[in-house]
Image (cartoon, rainbow, N blue to C red; front, side):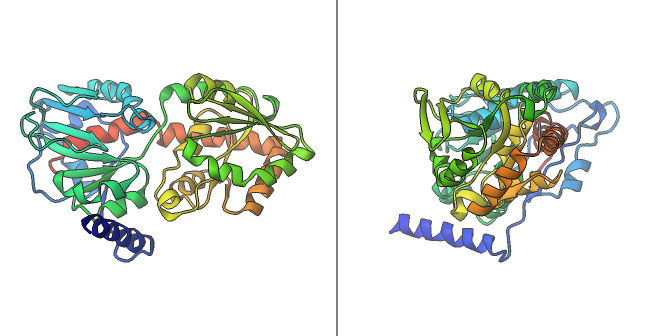
Length: 383
């Protein structure tokens, strides 16, 4: 009965948020770079404080001339080294360490699968709840989440604050379950952007005949749903589909005249396919929980690699990113089929989209911007 009640409360909050019925309030963290004199001598936050607005948050960073930043110990706890943990934490850590050094901060920042044995000021828990008896001092406990909020809905109150990474819609939902929620969006590694900059040296239409899809095995359903449209597309065009997913052995299939190459996910395979890709596409699963709350990270990843791509209009985070430069979105079998054919046959449009999308990721969605957001988050008294 308790489990049923918790599930009912979660879905009531989900549908109320989707309908815009008094959405929860959350803080959005600035991506601006910090200068050394901008960082406040702010002690570790006290419990029980309310969330502050972004403007108040920024002003809290100021410090009187000559005062040194407060030393902090920060630990990101990632008990499972999942793709999400890699994207959100481990891929971001080099930039975070670099930005902290550039800001003159005396901070010790670590990430790992084990809880810290020594006292820390901040304990950021990625989709995991520590044992109440854990004795690493009295840190500010932050719950960091990208998906599956239904599994943790009743545990949010055990944390001092919550950070959502997937989307603003997820942050608004979580704000119904906790009074202190912040949004720090997902981002792409600088290594991907560097590859993409080189990849843009060859226009997409001249790289090869690859149509590119990547994602988890759980996302293969929407791809297979588009099989009829993809088979029709291949009847009059030289196309092969690259599917990068999971860790199964490589294999090939035939969908009508379309050759489909399945490869396990790796950075090397992602780069190899991107170097041959004319176009990418990322259809989403249909349910509210599996589309409306999700990030646009898969489509941003393709653009970071220099691959023009079509996103799903049912994913607000993807649509918002693509809206920054007029990128294409689809939401039905007909619109996917039309856009795939139209863009495949438009070399100049592909070139412009690839360049504009890569620039949008570099300017607003790289791990460098995310690192700056975390520094500001840790520097405020009450995020």
